[in-house]
Amino acid sequence: MKILVVSDSHSSSRYLYEVYDTEKPDAICFLGDGLRGFLEFRDFGLPAGADVYVVCGNCDYEYYGEYSDSAVAVIAGRRFFMAHGHTFGVRYGVERICHEAALSKCEYALFGHTHQQTLRVCGNVTALNPGALQNGDYAVITSGEGKPLIELKKLK
Image (cartoon, rainbow, N blue to C red; front, side, top):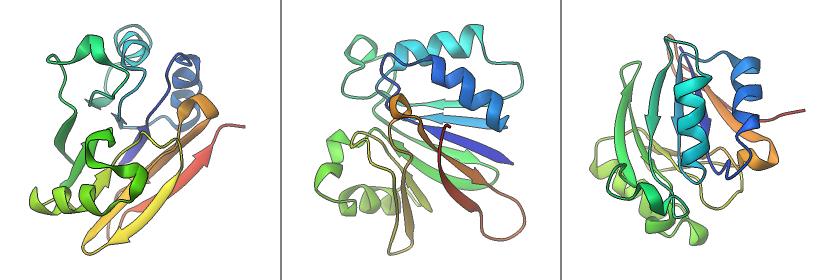
């Protein structure tokens, strides 16, 4: 299974189409900031069949209450803690979001907010920030037999 992880598209929703066409994922995790564009992509540009998981970012104020700022997703039998990250202080480190992921019995903490690609292991949790899609940054998790492969990528 191929999981596309994106965040911080802001007003650059055209990149959603490009990255989707490039990767052809089975699932998409959107980690906030640009939710309006992502929802338009989901509703009008996403072919049927891909699973979609979404959390709100600090710039998605019009969707507060409708979408949570954190969630747990079970994808391909693995638990992912998803958050934009601003409420976990990710600008200052990943320890708090990793702790929350561990409390939620998740193997992965997916977050955005900093616009910096990050892949770090803290304890039993792998922290992943795909970077800002508005800059062409994203991540792909390929899950199959054994440990998933995590790739930090950039649109060309």
